[in-house]
Length: 362
Image 1: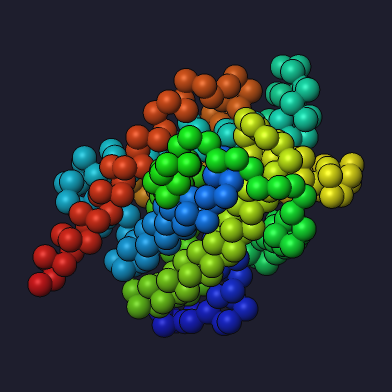
Image 2: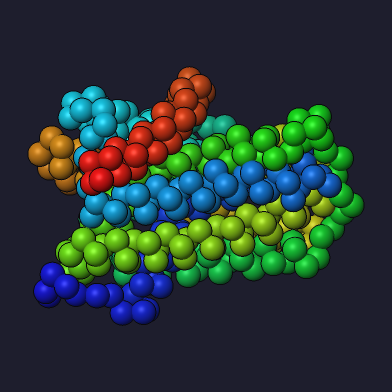
C-alpha cells in the first residue's frame, strides 16, 4: 500500500461504526435513561446539555488529535514532555486499567445475574471468561477493524437502535416528575452528567486506535488521517446523538419512578414491552457493548505505553487484562472517587493545545 491510500466508502463506514461501538459502553447506554427519568418534562434541555459533553466534546477531541496526525504527544506539548507523558498516562490508567475496563465486566455480570449473584467464585469465573474473550480478540490487533467494525459493531448498534426506536415510538408511561436539580437547571445538570460517560477522556484512547487502524490500512499521510478520522468522528457523533435522544425519551416516560440507575429504567422498559425475552436481549446487548469497549480501552492503553516505554504490546495487554479482571472481582468503590476530576483538566488541555498550535503556526 502507498502512503496516500484511501479507505473505500464501506471501510470508512466500518471505521465510523467501530468508533461508535467503542464509545457505546455500558455507561453510555445506562446514563441517558437515568437523565431522562430525572429530567422528566425538562428532558429536552437536559438532553441538550448532556449531548454537548457526551457527544460534541468527544468528537472534537478526536478531530483535534487527528489534526496532528494522531500523535498524542502533540496534545500535551503545552505541559512539557514529562508532565505531558505523566498526565496522559494517568488518564489512560484511570480510564482503562483502574476503572473503565473493570467496570465493563462488573456491569455485564450484574446485568446477567440481575444483581442476585454474589458468589466470589462466580465473579472470578465470569471475569476470567470476559477478559479472556477480550484477550482472544486483541491477539489479532491487525484484524480490529474486521472484528469490531464489520462484525461486532453492526450487531451491537442495530440492537441498541431497535430498542431506542421502540422507546421513542412507544413510550410506556407518563412524563416523570423532574427532580429539584433538573427542575431549576436542567441544561447545566445534563451538561455535568454528560461527563459521567467518561468519553471526554476515552476519545483520546479511541482517537489513537483510529489512527493506528488507518496506518495499518496504508493511510499514512496526515491529510488522509485527518480526513478519515474526522469522518469517523462525525459518524460516531451522529449515532451517539440519535441513540442518546431515544434513550432520554425512554427515561422521561419511565414507569419506574425514583430508579437508582439507568439499568433499572431500561430493564423495566424491555420487560414491559418484550417480556422475559427482552431481559435476555438486554443482557446480551449490554455484555456485547461492554466487551467492545473493553477491547478498545485495553488496546488503546497498551499501545500508548508500548510507544512511550517500549514494553511489549502483548505483555501490556496481558497485564492490563489481568489487573482489570482482579479489580472487577474485588470492586471499584475507592476508584470511582477520582476518575471524574480527570475530565476537566483534559478538556482544558485540549483547548490549550488548540490555542498553542494556533500561536505556533501564526
